[in-house]
Image 1 (cartoon, helix red, strand yellow):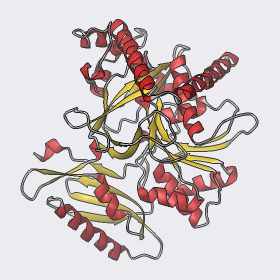
Image 2 (cartoon, rainbow, N blue to C red; image 1 turned 90 degrees about the vertical axis):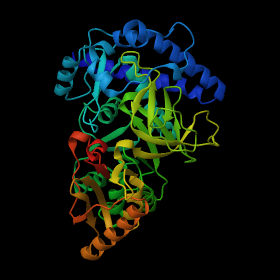
Image 3 (cartoon, one colour; image 1 turned 90 degrees about the horizontal axis):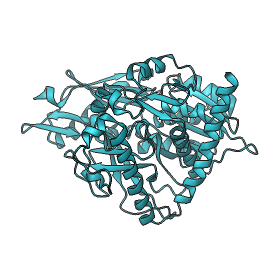
Image 4 (tube, helix red, strand yellow; image 1 turned 180 degrees about the horizontal axis):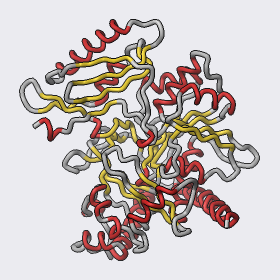
Length: 470
């Protein structure tokens, strides 16, 4: 039985490399060819969903699904609608939410459900965990997207050169980053998987022993490791550094680049889309969206399309290859800005110019003239990242005010730094027309990471909803 399991995993990985070669051909398409392919895949997906998913059959009752589909004519769904109707949402009636959740709770490795499905969960940062299911071909397609990310970074796994790859992320097979790393670990690379919740000293020790050629990590962790490198406690020389899963600030990128002398790649992904949504190429002009696998619609608060070059309030995501659990115009709170210009590399894919966090990261403060004032996380980043005294920080908005936890560099004055933070932040918030709440600054040895959130660090977090302020 163990032999059969290993053979199936090898089959799935082999199929992923075959699919990735087919995807390579798409990068030579014209923009018109790509859009035609999107329309064809969308029509197939919608027709399949309407035939095999009771939820979509009802949702699309007034839509003619046997003809060309315009995506903007389709209704929008969200996580609540999907999870509340899960057993009717999926297209295989054997898939039951309670059984899938029990399966995920027992996972210890890259195991199959019913011998043919992979099941993963999201971290539930919005308060509700999502469950996502892929059949074997769909999982191979998701893996192909991950392999494609490597090709953009000029990393090609092979037996002739087995890249030494260290990945620092979630360490649970229920989470897609860990699961895909294990699924692709079939002997073509030498893989080291480390937990994002480990201490920086432990991570540095493990990396020193392994000496990776490629380092992949959350940007907040990569920036801390860059500090360890600069201060002599870490001594590695990666040829490639890639960040993912969190918003990467300019200060984080600068630290990485200065410590290792390489421009870091940045990958954008989400479990709903099979993890790999896009990555920058060697020109680093923005992240290419893999539009032959996913459709991203950048919209405002009212779900109206936002023009390229302007920041959106949220995303509508359509996964073009998951027919088991159709994700069609699924609402995600990520705030993206698309580039107005194509990449000079010639690929037909649009570029993500900036990822500005999530709309639920926005802090709402009372306005001096009444009403509420939205404060984008970048206002906090712009102040705290210019203070050389601070090594790491986190901002939390609570009933008692704004609390800033900060890790000080050795030899700096906590009192002076705290006063400087309060003065600059108060001036910035008042310039926005907000009534500045009490600001509390506390200095800590480190900022813990929550394993339940895949070890990610949310730099700015509000524990107060807009509704509670009214």
